Image (cartoon, rainbow, N blue to C red; front, side, top):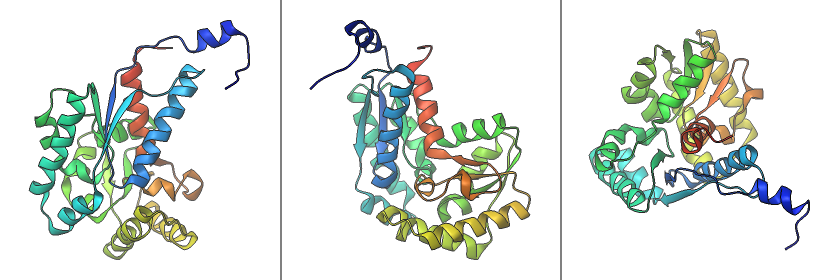
Length: 250
């Protein structure tokens, strides 16, 4: 391996930096978890320079098992699985946990009860970004579980936000695209157009911004696809986790 630049410059750029060890509970799906890993390392590189990368430990579950529990409504069965993974991460030295999925924050309380280190709740980091943008009403695109059940919408509302969800037919199509396409690594132009149409209807209903409340959605939709600001929950989650991990590091 060869390097460029002066030895002094390389040394200063790669001096040891105290990073709290992040623990990632991933695999739901691995398509978006890969984005968590990539984004974390890109952000650390951009902030610290040189050869710096993110300090993290990752556990990746078999999503087929979790998806079956979602479909059957067996959240009590899913909770202990993710709680056990969180405990393994803490045993591996994790000082802060990120659950790399919006939907499974349905069982965030089970995870928090299983560990002594903090779990950075994805809805909280998203709400903070929405409020920082000066918005009060957002549309929510997510799995049907997240759009139709109260656990996520109520968490956003607790931050003073009004949350709008698509009509029933739109919710069904948004959900289908997530599971049949995005979680399978398929990103189709026609599905992007479908999401754009759903966003337009949310905006017409009063949404000032749109929360991409499933970690796979931002693999398909970006700011250029919406007439109002979009809030990409994966990136927001990673940014908040690294802010906590790096603290006051310049």
